[in-house]
Length: 287
Length: 346
Image (cartoon, rainbow over all chains, first blue to last red; front, side, top):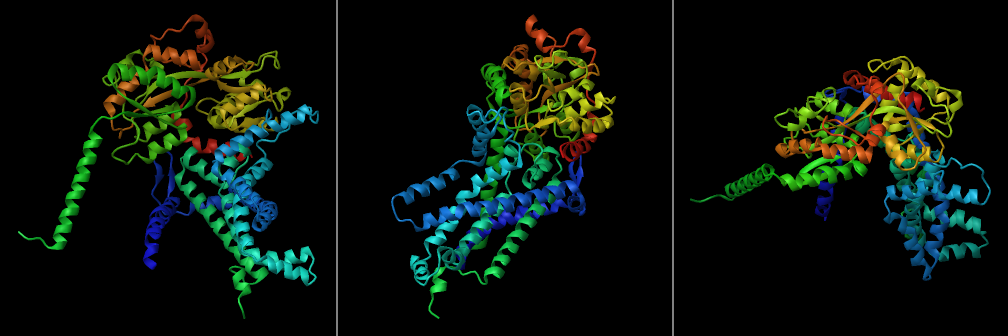
């Protein structure tokens, strides 16, 4: 059976591990203004990224935006996911398609739509002015808030789908049994639904966090020139500065932070709630 | 004669590889459509109408446009430098990028034997490894309804009356830095005064826009009133109904030249040089001036008087034209970008 893994492993080795190794080697080179880069074995790019306040700020901004977006997305997505996981009527498929619909549109197109909405002459400012609520257009574009809302709009479907698939597999009888025994809805949620939904919550948060950390189009189009996150900074180094070694070093730092926070998050979940069950069947298995 | 299984497999693989190599060589040797790396929008459209189509009709050379911004194109050319066959036959570039690529040995030298129209090009604009396609001058654009007394120099932008009303394009950080250097007493070979001047400008709540188009929208909505920009862009924006006038600054007006070159690893060099020749055709040059406001780079392209008044500098203004010191600006490019990102935009 293990042979079934071979094609996927070859693909990953060839298209992910290989380029990553190559990029790590590039990150140790030095910048040559007219030679793209000069062969070297130097950690200077990593030292520069770690000690330069500019890059420190970019890392902090990226982490802050990613954590905030993940938290807000979870709060918004959970009720919708619960409803989707529980409802059994014809509206379910309609809502499911509506949830998936944004995924059919590319990030750039979606951000362009947000630009039309948030611009000084955009729909929101136009509407507020027509209602007489504002005298001058509000600055909605090129702000961190615009980026956060834009990213949430992108990642929300991922969280809803991931969490709802787990909630769907939690037997409704468990909630009914807890209620029968006198548990209030809050207690039912806290003691029954949430612990059993944790695998979905953990998976959804991981997925969304990784997407937020690597956001590019939304940060560039809605954040404007003054707002910097890691992915645009990597692009700037590769394409604008032609500093491939620094770009490769920043890409690795982004990868390390994403991996570290993902692992720490999973460990935190496990420590807070004990062993994360693989699914409701594990909890229901006879002793 | 008998073959073992191993010998048979080796021979089969060897002949297969030989066939593949032979085939790829024959494909590479045959002249297909030439690939022109260019900007999209008006520029790509005009190239299509004024160069690609006439070339296909006159010489049967088919053209495929590889549309992208100049930064990815420059990176692609540098990354492909070691390849035997590159992906582009002609690369449209800004003057600073063309200089960098010629220094990096990416571009072929261009001579009159390959590009016959080179003799008509203004001497000051000629380069070793590229042709100057179109050019313009860096001027001050302002809204005359908001600023009734026109500024005279770049230094006039540093005025508290324009607090929050000065807009700059982020992608033109090099040109903006040069304007700040000139305002501070610097020159095309001395950007040092720019750093102090840019910090002063930041304290005047200068607005930075991610693209020229975003800046145009801000000028149109009167969110900002004044900027530093190419005269040609001003011409286009005025045609689009944006209330603008221009001033040629007293400190001097740096030129911006959009050029084209042939990568050393281009597959179709003969056709690519024919393409450069067609770009210098007077009709094509006049067409770019009419639609985009860029000045012709050849002596024999004559513009109608009214158009010439709008897109060309007069005799007195021409004395203020500044040719860039490419060696200096390229050597300092990392510092310029770092200061722009880390200090000015921070």
